[in-house]
Length: 395
Image 1 (cartoon, rainbow, N blue to C red):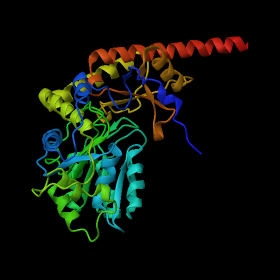
Image 2 (image 1 turned 90 degrees about the vertical axis):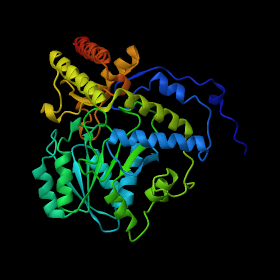
Image 3 (image 1 turned 90 degrees about the horizontal axis):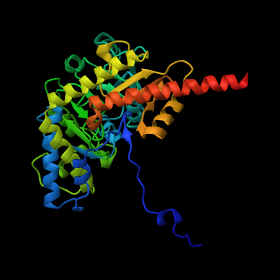
Image 4 (image 1 turned 180 degrees about the vertical axis):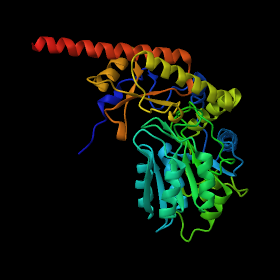
């Protein structure tokens, strides 16, 4: 049997233009998109390695770290989570997952596959974890690794006490892994000062780069543990000692580990360059100002934020309660159909309960905030009017 060429590939590629106001990815700037149109380079070409070195310096800046083991994992944000856990965990290790939404459970699933004894400390619904709750779980489980998302994109909750958690982890000789995929750029993060052992983030959110490369950094303390492992990390692709050699992190000759996408490197390099030019503090300030404006607008529309405490609201992914009797899917479909604007629903514990509005990167502007507020209100009112008409027609 001969399989014929598919007819769909005879048509020209069509990609619509959309405004991505969901939890990620965010829209790339023209600078980033243009960078990705450059010619492809070989993954061991000196020019490609030079770009990798420049990206590495940019990552150190955004994490505020001097760690040598700073690089990218070729893969989406989940690859950062995998790499952190794969390298730190050995069979039988007790690990503790902080739960403020879906990501602690996801990390627990991964850790169990690496042979860990997994425990959880779960916050009250819609709340961040207190230091007391975390220390109580430390006393009970004596974990080797503690995972927490600084910002959980499924609930819109920010964990403000990372510095104190860092101190707690040192007290209990535990390694701290912090997921900053949704939070970096929208709130302060000081990796070295806060004693974080592993941090990773997403290239496609507040950085405004393409998805597919995950910035990650390991502390010297974490690197020492990895080098003293009894067994090699269970996944070759996530072995940080090998990937770090490819990235030139350890002062040894570079090796071939995998074929990195030079095209994605160009995009991330330019996203980082723009981020650095604006400055970390200015970027954080802009994201927070946009979130405050959105929250004020939500209140004026008679809607309610899901996270009750203002100091626990993540600026980059804002969660709004779906009004009673409103189908969130119809609201999202209305916004996309009429305006090509993405508004997302909930994820994990917030499915059917919230709208998620992302204010990240190119989309973290006051103009975009006003636009999405107007569209959200129009969509909700339209859905309500249709529901009333439907009920009347039944009568």
